[in-house]
Length: 329
Ligand code: F6P
Image (cartoon, rainbow, N blue to C red; front, top):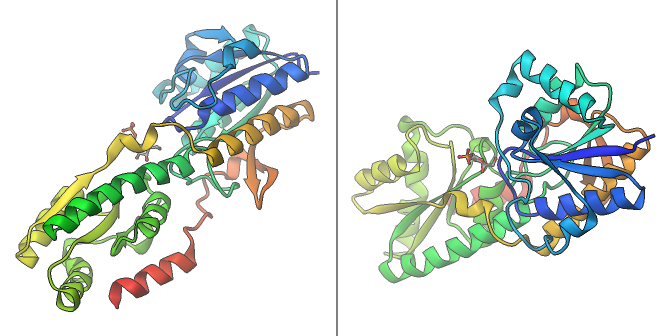
């Protein structure tokens, strides 16, 4: 029987993590389970840096971005010694289970700990990147899209006024989910994602042709290219410089960066976070171990942690096809 669990947030923070912590704590309270929260991801676990989490500690946090538990990436966990130490702390603190709110990298940490820990481990997908298999959406993705969209709309205003070409770089690590979604919603003329294959310097023409085509058709006007990070070898600023040289027209780069990780979670993220946090605790009570609590077709589901990073999750092929069609028309 589960009596005491811990929760931590790990890796890149994502809007909605607080809502998830709240759901974990409130659901655990309903089952008379004690909860502690480790600070700074796995670092807090290794350093025994934690706090008790009672329902009153998670009051009115649902609307806040970031994470009250703080987050971090933990290099020590990549070593055997780190995983052993983490398991020792979990045993010492008499924890029956650990809930890990994070992305695929954080789940790799959980798998390492599992080699030495006799309790249960469950993951909840929290990352703006939406690059975790076994769930339609990750906590934070919906908010990140809206944040990016708001920024691109503003860039469009100035791009229109100056009839300029802008390259807007969005996050996503190695996934084009944010770029494709925000690019489509912003009406970007071109979208570049890692999934479309690498753009080498030799292939710059591939990007130039649609711009030149648009210039021919519309004359001088604003043109927005959304570029997922890690799409071009030298980065988006280098890409803008090279396109400028080829076109003979100035192309401006705007790197949106960490603004995409902050802000109040939108409703969809608060609801998803609440559902998955609650479901994770319920499934721990039912005996779940080495699983991720995800949602597919609005149904909460368990998915093996070992498979969350297998990259089966594809960006929407319909939108990809449509975007490529309109970019070349
Ligand atoms: O995984 C979330 C994310 O924001 C990615 O989109 C991005 O590549 C990375 O984290 C940035 O990490 P850091 O905050 O360490 O620069």
